[in-house]
Image 1 (cartoon, rainbow, N blue to C red):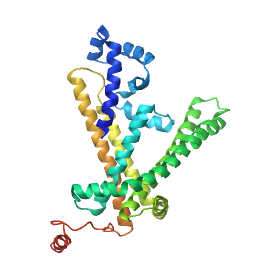
Image 2 (image 1 turned 135 degrees about the horizontal axis):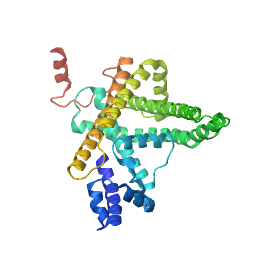
Image 3 (image 1 turned 30 degrees about the vertical axis):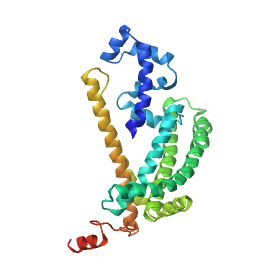
Length: 310
Protein backbone atom coordinates (compact mmCIF):
# COMPACT_ATOMS: atom_id res chain seq x y z
CA UNK A 1 0.00 0.00 0.00
CA UNK A 2 2.86 2.36 0.85
CA UNK A 3 4.58 1.60 -2.45
CA UNK A 4 1.38 2.08 -4.47
CA UNK A 5 0.70 5.49 -2.90
CA UNK A 6 4.31 6.64 -3.19
CA UNK A 7 4.81 5.56 -6.80
CA UNK A 8 2.70 8.32 -8.49
CA UNK A 9 4.34 10.97 -6.32
CA UNK A 10 7.79 9.60 -7.13
CA UNK A 11 7.03 9.71 -10.86
CA UNK A 12 6.06 13.38 -10.57
CA UNK A 13 9.33 14.20 -8.81
CA UNK A 14 11.21 12.13 -11.39
CA UNK A 15 9.63 14.19 -14.16
CA UNK A 16 10.64 17.43 -12.47
CA UNK A 17 14.23 16.21 -12.09
CA UNK A 18 14.39 14.98 -15.69
CA UNK A 19 13.02 18.29 -16.98
CA UNK A 20 15.66 20.18 -15.04
CA UNK A 21 18.58 17.96 -16.05
CA UNK A 22 17.59 17.24 -19.66
CA UNK A 23 20.71 16.26 -21.63
CA UNK A 24 23.20 18.35 -19.67
CA UNK A 25 26.49 17.14 -18.27
CA UNK A 26 24.92 17.39 -14.82
CA UNK A 27 22.67 14.48 -15.76
CA UNK A 28 25.70 12.20 -16.14
CA UNK A 29 27.14 13.33 -12.80
CA UNK A 30 23.77 12.93 -11.06
CA UNK A 31 23.51 9.35 -12.35
CA UNK A 32 26.85 8.55 -10.68
CA UNK A 33 25.80 9.93 -7.29
CA UNK A 34 24.60 13.02 -5.49
CA UNK A 35 25.80 16.27 -7.02
CA UNK A 36 25.38 18.78 -4.26
CA UNK A 37 25.84 21.88 -6.42
CA UNK A 38 23.12 20.74 -8.81
CA UNK A 39 20.92 19.71 -5.88
CA UNK A 40 21.06 23.22 -4.43
CA UNK A 41 20.27 24.67 -7.84
CA UNK A 42 17.30 22.33 -8.27
CA UNK A 43 15.94 23.04 -4.77
CA UNK A 44 16.10 26.81 -5.39
CA UNK A 45 13.71 26.62 -8.34
CA UNK A 46 11.59 23.60 -7.32
CA UNK A 47 7.85 23.90 -6.76
CA UNK A 48 5.14 21.51 -5.58
CA UNK A 49 6.37 17.97 -4.99
CA UNK A 50 9.82 18.99 -6.21
CA UNK A 51 10.36 20.84 -2.93
CA UNK A 52 10.33 17.49 -1.11
CA UNK A 53 13.48 16.34 -2.94
CA UNK A 54 15.93 17.34 -0.23
CA UNK A 55 18.91 15.61 1.44
CA UNK A 56 16.47 14.32 4.08
CA UNK A 57 15.29 11.67 1.58
CA UNK A 58 18.59 9.80 1.95
CA UNK A 59 18.86 6.88 4.36
CA UNK A 60 17.96 7.32 8.02
CA UNK A 61 17.46 11.08 7.57
CA UNK A 62 13.99 10.30 6.22
CA UNK A 63 12.93 8.78 9.55
CA UNK A 64 14.34 11.64 11.59
CA UNK A 65 12.72 14.20 9.30
CA UNK A 66 9.33 12.50 9.70
CA UNK A 67 9.63 12.58 13.50
CA UNK A 68 10.81 16.19 13.40
CA UNK A 69 7.87 17.25 11.24
CA UNK A 70 5.45 15.85 13.84
CA UNK A 71 7.10 17.56 16.80
CA UNK A 72 7.49 20.83 14.89
CA UNK A 73 3.89 20.70 13.67
CA UNK A 74 4.84 21.09 10.00
CA UNK A 75 1.91 20.76 7.62
CA UNK A 76 2.71 18.64 4.52
CA UNK A 77 2.02 20.03 1.07
CA UNK A 78 -1.34 19.14 -0.49
CA UNK A 79 -0.26 16.09 -2.58
CA UNK A 80 1.50 14.53 0.39
CA UNK A 81 -1.45 15.31 2.65
CA UNK A 82 -3.82 13.51 0.28
CA UNK A 83 -1.46 10.53 0.05
CA UNK A 84 -1.24 10.43 3.84
CA UNK A 85 -5.05 10.57 4.13
CA UNK A 86 -5.41 7.66 1.69
CA UNK A 87 -2.80 5.68 3.60
CA UNK A 88 -4.58 6.27 6.92
CA UNK A 89 -7.91 5.28 5.36
CA UNK A 90 -6.37 2.08 3.98
CA UNK A 91 -4.78 1.29 7.32
CA UNK A 92 -8.09 1.89 9.11
CA UNK A 93 -9.73 -0.59 6.76
CA UNK A 94 -7.26 -3.44 7.28
CA UNK A 95 -6.65 -2.83 11.01
CA UNK A 96 -10.11 -4.14 11.90
CA UNK A 97 -9.34 -7.46 10.22
CA UNK A 98 -5.86 -7.56 11.75
CA UNK A 99 -7.09 -7.04 15.32
CA UNK A 100 -9.91 -9.53 14.75
CA UNK A 101 -7.39 -12.13 13.57
CA UNK A 102 -5.15 -11.56 16.57
CA UNK A 103 -8.08 -11.72 18.98
CA UNK A 104 -9.37 -15.03 17.58
CA UNK A 105 -5.88 -16.56 17.69
CA UNK A 106 -6.60 -18.76 14.69
CA UNK A 107 -6.80 -18.32 10.90
CA UNK A 108 -9.87 -16.46 9.68
CA UNK A 109 -9.18 -17.01 5.98
CA UNK A 110 -9.55 -14.33 3.33
CA UNK A 111 -13.34 -14.12 3.61
CA UNK A 112 -13.30 -13.77 7.38
CA UNK A 113 -10.49 -11.21 7.31
CA UNK A 114 -12.15 -8.88 4.80
CA UNK A 115 -15.56 -9.38 6.40
CA UNK A 116 -14.08 -8.07 9.65
CA UNK A 117 -12.40 -5.21 7.76
CA UNK A 118 -15.74 -4.13 6.31
CA UNK A 119 -17.60 -4.57 9.59
CA UNK A 120 -15.31 -2.33 11.62
CA UNK A 121 -14.24 0.18 8.97
CA UNK A 122 -17.05 2.69 9.50
CA UNK A 123 -16.80 2.32 13.28
CA UNK A 124 -13.10 3.10 13.00
CA UNK A 125 -13.94 6.07 10.76
CA UNK A 126 -16.14 7.52 13.50
CA UNK A 127 -13.38 6.86 16.01
CA UNK A 128 -10.85 8.46 13.66
CA UNK A 129 -13.02 11.55 13.31
CA UNK A 130 -13.11 12.01 17.09
CA UNK A 131 -9.39 11.38 17.49
CA UNK A 132 -8.69 13.69 14.54
CA UNK A 133 -10.42 16.52 16.40
CA UNK A 134 -8.20 15.83 19.42
CA UNK A 135 -5.04 15.87 17.28
CA UNK A 136 -6.24 19.05 15.58
CA UNK A 137 -6.62 20.70 18.98
CA UNK A 138 -3.15 19.56 20.06
CA UNK A 139 -1.42 20.91 16.95
CA UNK A 140 -3.57 24.03 16.56
CA UNK A 141 -3.65 25.27 20.16
CA UNK A 142 -1.37 23.25 22.48
CA UNK A 143 1.70 23.14 20.20
CA UNK A 144 1.76 26.93 19.47
CA UNK A 145 1.15 27.63 23.17
CA UNK A 146 4.02 25.39 24.33
CA UNK A 147 6.57 26.48 21.74
CA UNK A 148 5.39 30.06 21.57
CA UNK A 149 4.19 31.56 24.83
CA UNK A 150 5.64 28.99 27.28
CA UNK A 151 9.02 28.68 25.52
CA UNK A 152 9.43 32.43 25.24
CA UNK A 153 8.59 32.88 28.91
CA UNK A 154 11.08 30.22 30.00
CA UNK A 155 13.94 31.49 27.83
CA UNK A 156 13.36 35.25 27.86
CA UNK A 157 16.15 36.06 30.32
CA UNK A 158 18.51 33.22 29.46
CA UNK A 159 22.01 33.90 28.17
CA UNK A 160 23.13 30.28 27.73
CA UNK A 161 22.02 28.61 24.52
CA UNK A 162 22.42 25.14 26.05
CA UNK A 163 19.80 25.89 28.70
CA UNK A 164 17.35 27.16 26.08
CA UNK A 165 17.90 23.98 24.09
CA UNK A 166 17.24 21.87 27.21
CA UNK A 167 13.93 23.66 27.76
CA UNK A 168 12.96 23.05 24.13
CA UNK A 169 13.76 19.35 24.47
CA UNK A 170 11.65 19.22 27.65
CA UNK A 171 8.73 20.82 25.82
CA UNK A 172 9.18 18.35 22.94
CA UNK A 173 8.98 15.54 25.50
CA UNK A 174 5.84 16.99 27.09
CA UNK A 175 4.10 17.40 23.73
CA UNK A 176 5.29 13.96 22.64
CA UNK A 177 3.74 12.37 25.73
CA UNK A 178 0.39 13.98 24.88
CA UNK A 179 0.56 12.63 21.33
CA UNK A 180 1.59 9.17 22.54
CA UNK A 181 -1.24 9.10 25.08
CA UNK A 182 -3.80 9.82 22.38
CA UNK A 183 -2.18 7.14 20.22
CA UNK A 184 -2.33 4.52 22.99
CA UNK A 185 -5.91 5.48 23.87
CA UNK A 186 -6.89 5.07 20.21
CA UNK A 187 -5.21 1.65 19.98
CA UNK A 188 -7.11 0.27 22.95
CA UNK A 189 -10.35 1.86 21.74
CA UNK A 190 -9.92 -0.08 18.48
CA UNK A 191 -9.29 -3.25 20.46
CA UNK A 192 -12.49 -2.75 22.46
CA UNK A 193 -14.50 -2.01 19.33
CA UNK A 194 -13.38 -5.27 17.72
CA UNK A 195 -13.22 -7.62 20.70
CA UNK A 196 -16.38 -6.38 22.39
CA UNK A 197 -18.21 -5.59 19.13
CA UNK A 198 -18.80 -2.01 20.22
CA UNK A 199 -20.52 0.44 17.89
CA UNK A 200 -20.07 3.69 19.81
CA UNK A 201 -16.74 5.46 19.25
CA UNK A 202 -17.28 7.60 22.35
CA UNK A 203 -18.06 4.51 24.42
CA UNK A 204 -14.94 2.75 23.09
CA UNK A 205 -12.73 5.73 24.01
CA UNK A 206 -14.23 5.86 27.50
CA UNK A 207 -13.75 2.11 27.93
CA UNK A 208 -10.17 2.38 26.67
CA UNK A 209 -9.48 5.13 29.20
CA UNK A 210 -10.88 2.93 32.01
CA UNK A 211 -8.65 0.06 30.92
CA UNK A 212 -5.53 2.26 30.85
CA UNK A 213 -6.43 3.80 34.21
CA UNK A 214 -6.84 0.37 35.82
CA UNK A 215 -3.66 -1.11 34.27
CA UNK A 216 -1.24 1.83 33.89
CA UNK A 217 1.93 -0.12 34.64
CA UNK A 218 1.23 -2.92 32.18
CA UNK A 219 0.10 -0.54 29.44
CA UNK A 220 3.10 1.78 29.83
CA UNK A 221 5.52 -1.13 30.16
CA UNK A 222 4.26 -2.84 27.03
CA UNK A 223 4.29 0.37 25.00
CA UNK A 224 7.78 1.11 26.27
CA UNK A 225 9.07 -2.32 25.18
CA UNK A 226 7.53 -1.92 21.74
CA UNK A 227 8.97 1.59 21.44
CA UNK A 228 12.43 0.32 22.41
CA UNK A 229 12.13 -2.28 19.65
CA UNK A 230 11.39 0.48 17.16
CA UNK A 231 14.28 2.61 18.47
CA UNK A 232 16.59 -0.40 18.10
CA UNK A 233 15.44 -0.80 14.49
CA UNK A 234 16.15 2.87 13.79
CA UNK A 235 19.56 2.50 15.43
CA UNK A 236 20.46 -0.45 13.23
CA UNK A 237 19.13 1.40 10.19
CA UNK A 238 21.30 4.41 11.06
CA UNK A 239 24.35 2.14 10.98
CA UNK A 240 23.59 0.34 7.71
CA UNK A 241 21.48 2.88 5.81
CA UNK A 242 22.86 3.45 2.30
CA UNK A 243 24.17 6.81 1.23
CA UNK A 244 24.38 8.26 -2.24
CA UNK A 245 25.58 6.41 -5.29
CA UNK A 246 24.60 5.22 -8.71
CA UNK A 247 24.37 1.98 -10.63
CA UNK A 248 24.27 -1.21 -8.57
CA UNK A 249 24.78 0.76 -5.35
CA UNK A 250 21.54 2.63 -6.00
CA UNK A 251 19.51 -0.56 -6.40
CA UNK A 252 21.10 -2.15 -3.33
CA UNK A 253 20.13 0.96 -1.36
CA UNK A 254 16.59 0.77 -2.71
CA UNK A 255 16.30 -2.91 -1.67
CA UNK A 256 17.60 -2.11 1.83
CA UNK A 257 15.15 0.75 2.17
CA UNK A 258 12.23 -1.51 1.25
CA UNK A 259 13.44 -4.06 3.81
CA UNK A 260 13.45 -1.33 6.44
CA UNK A 261 9.88 -0.35 5.50
CA UNK A 262 8.72 -3.98 5.79
CA UNK A 263 10.44 -4.37 9.16
CA UNK A 264 8.86 -1.16 10.40
CA UNK A 265 5.46 -2.51 9.33
CA UNK A 266 6.12 -5.73 11.25
CA UNK A 267 6.82 -3.68 14.37
CA UNK A 268 3.56 -1.82 13.83
CA UNK A 269 1.78 -5.19 13.69
CA UNK A 270 3.64 -6.17 16.86
CA UNK A 271 2.15 -3.11 18.58
CA UNK A 272 -1.38 -4.23 17.64
CA UNK A 273 -0.78 -7.89 18.51
CA UNK A 274 0.74 -7.21 21.93
CA UNK A 275 -1.90 -4.64 22.89
CA UNK A 276 -4.68 -7.02 21.86
CA UNK A 277 -3.09 -9.83 23.87
CA UNK A 278 -2.67 -7.58 26.92
CA UNK A 279 -6.29 -6.46 26.77
CA UNK A 280 -7.61 -10.01 26.51
CA UNK A 281 -5.30 -11.34 29.22
CA UNK A 282 -6.06 -8.50 31.64
CA UNK A 283 -9.82 -9.07 31.37
CA UNK A 284 -9.52 -12.86 31.23
CA UNK A 285 -11.22 -12.86 27.83
CA UNK A 286 -8.86 -14.95 25.72
CA UNK A 287 -11.88 -16.09 23.66
CA UNK A 288 -13.95 -12.96 24.08
CA UNK A 289 -14.43 -12.32 20.38
CA UNK A 290 -17.65 -13.80 19.05
CA UNK A 291 -16.97 -16.88 16.95
CA UNK A 292 -17.55 -16.71 13.18
CA UNK A 293 -20.08 -18.81 11.34
CA UNK A 294 -18.78 -22.41 11.63
CA UNK A 295 -17.32 -23.67 8.35
CA UNK A 296 -15.54 -26.98 7.88
CA UNK A 297 -12.70 -27.59 8.63
CA UNK A 298 -13.01 -24.66 11.07
CA UNK A 299 -16.34 -25.82 12.47
CA UNK A 300 -17.14 -25.78 16.16
CA UNK A 301 -16.86 -29.57 16.26
CA UNK A 302 -13.41 -29.48 14.71
CA UNK A 303 -12.26 -26.91 17.27
CA UNK A 304 -13.72 -28.95 20.13
CA UNK A 305 -11.88 -32.04 18.91
CA UNK A 306 -8.67 -30.07 18.60
CA UNK A 307 -9.00 -28.78 22.16
CA UNK A 308 -9.64 -32.21 23.64
CA UNK A 309 -6.65 -33.76 21.89
CA UNK A 310 -4.19 -31.11 23.02
